[in-house]
Length: 373
Length: 107
Image 1 (cartoon, each protein chain N blue to C red):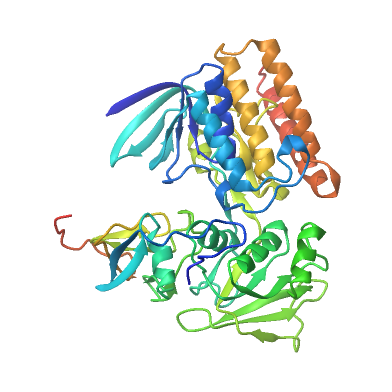
Image 2 (cartoon, helix red, strand yellow):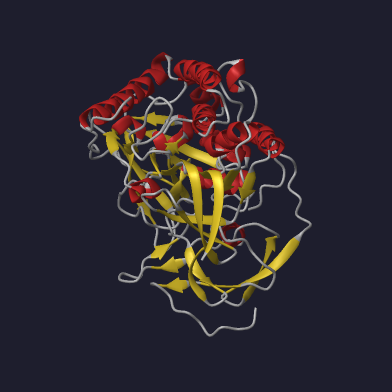
């Protein structure tokens, strides 16, 4: 079997993986990035809205433009991006099994950064397996990337930022949003996104849930109902909406399969989407030389994924001697400061607490194992 | 329905097309797009039926993770149609259960 050797192997050519590749390759490391998709950028090219935050975080720039800038940065840095390449496994020694052009190869790298991202959660209800029930991100992919409307009359479940933003983007693509349904008594995402929907006349129904998808071989209607304080549907409040599509925007979970194979340790953090890898302030896991970055470390958003990617890229390149330790530490400290900014405010606080819990779990692990910090 | 005109994105270029066959019926697809979006544009939403209960399934995640959209493509079962690009002359078949390998024709 063919063996490919490189300094740093990165799994995932999305926001985090490309950012890591840019930093590590610019420092002089031989960097290879693997992604099973035919196009790079992960989910960035689906984000047609303007990003929030400060100038440092590309505020006011649309996601796909950030993706284009990142791609040219990676090209200039000289990283080798291999698309249409599936990474199907990782050994405890960090060697990767890949399939490229139908052939299986092994990749041996001094350092590995896994930036595999996250996938959408599913929610079970009668009829939820019918064609026409799909992730909100799936509908976004269809409308913004593949340029086909997945449905014309849509009910959106979930009022986090994904639910709010994707609803608006589906309207921009020509769909009608019959209702946005949220089980909690208040919307979950930013008020500014919700206001755009309200101005466009979309009913936002809090304390409501979907109770049934109706149809024989595809969605022909959606039944929704009001819920009580225990999130139980209140009999008699059912409404039937003439939907052909029900989108679920009910959170995401990290794609950690490769990490489980490598034997690295995990901790459970609900707000981060489930089991997440233990890692230190340099994003190195309990497997020496194995780093993580982006949504796989805990579901956040693209801006923090890009910052974490840069941090992991610098840390990995520094550990191989491509960046002097003092300079690397200074740059990583600046990135950590920017991450703290992203994890602030009423929406960010829970993510900052989650990250602190995760770092503490890593520290506890190393103390227990008698490992140096 | 194609998203041709869009307030943010460039107008969609629909000039470069290929023909694929869904259960032997020709469908026009845009070169390079995934099989799933070409089928959805043609009004096809149910891609397969499940092994035990014969229930219909279509796309769920559209990024190659959930495998709900798998179909038989050029005689090979369980192809994830949301990430597999179309090719001119490709045969896509509604899949029942886990599917079977069909007799291989020259590609």
